[in-house]
Image (cartoon, rainbow, N blue to C red; front, side, top):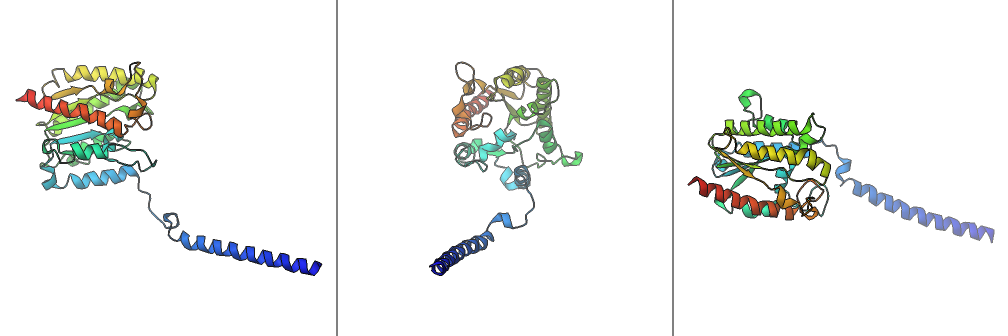
Length: 277
């Protein structure tokens, strides 16, 4: 009986080991198809975006159709994202962009040079002429936009220089001056910084900077070519808190948020054109 039992146990173990071996063999074979098994250089998202923009601004034929240049950081960049590449199920602004700024409406045909993570100093480097050591993303003479559509500054409120609001404001002003110097024939549609999910950051930085930018747009230096668009009120509730459904993470707009933005931006562009006639 003992011999029989031992033989049965061994048979069971053999079957189990055989099944495990088959499973491991299948897993090992499948592993060759995983990206995780193949050597690859690390390429960050911002590097991909920079390469894409550099290619776009080298294409003179395409640039001649551009009426708007969107300038900024991830909040501007993510107009071009549909599904979020990092968190599946989150939608950004691609569908709204394609309908309104992707060429279907020629007078609003746009180029987007926003890059996620950019602070004002990074943007300044990108638009600095190549002859001066920058990337020269506005160098091509075929690029003659009617408007720059600008929103930037919130990233400078993280790991900030002190005083924070002064640093953010000074960075935005430097970008405004640089854009005008590069393309003096373009008008500047300056947009307020959007609210965050942090009331303290909004109170200490976003709202004071927006108030200063609104006044700057009316100043002697900028009034002749700058239009101010205050988006902040459309993105907060009656209590002044960020409207959560318009954002995916407390900072970046959702598809609904980009729709709200578009629905205020397009009439602002039309009104600016009408006022200039």
